[in-house]
Image (cartoon, rainbow, N blue to C red):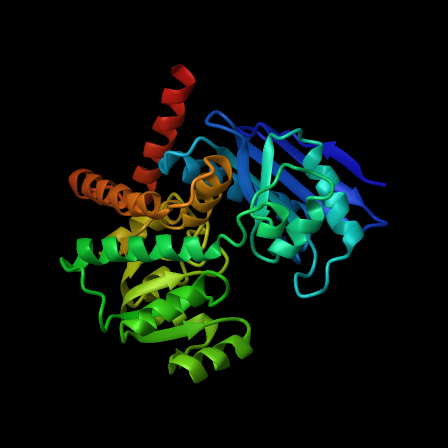
Length: 349
């Protein structure tokens, strides 16, 4: 039987923990803010060492989703679900149905989507118990996998960052180091290969690396070394926290622009440390907003053309970089400020 308990978390509207031992479910759902609309965010599955660790991840990720929606001018808020478990093992139908019941208990305050460890086929099962989700298979009435749209938005962001840092829009022959070649990183790899880029990749799955080397002739780098590669762009597309006191001093790229959420381990000190090294950072919740844009435009607005929305990522970044130059402040805190200002304006209107 599914048991749900609510946890108080300052600054968050609703946080619940769900357990169903018979179904093998242990999950946390955090709804950060719904001022702009229901809290949309993916379901992530990781082998968290404890409920406390899972809770901390859910809180960080749901807050990032709020900022991502706000800075992208979407009428949705931020939420996130995390499931404690091994994403490499098959998920039982019982577990997915219990998760659906947990999502349904929030009455539409949280809209689920796929994230690391979850796929359209999983959402299709969850949809048997709740209508409050996005990104299910087209056969189930959803818009399908949104990760290609995330990748397209990151490409727009990289183009904008290259223009800011190097005063050119030409990406042909660029050197790029991609950390993580999963659902988001792989399309980046394909795109930059088409531009005859010099590509370096790392991934915890050696088989993915071998396949990338076989198909695209990339250079494989061990995960602990990928950030050190001398390149124009370092694109973190794995899990968060990769920009930290150990890696920032050794970064070899002039630009950091990638799909990973919560890239800084310390979001107060990390951005300024990067700026002191004259490394341009494209804030993660701006550059990786393509996925949430896909879900909002296709499933809430019921429109098909994402292009104008994805191109807005470039305009937002240009404004952030302009303010960064003007104020001498790192891009990330400026992006946070702009997102929070939009939420405040909505609250006061």
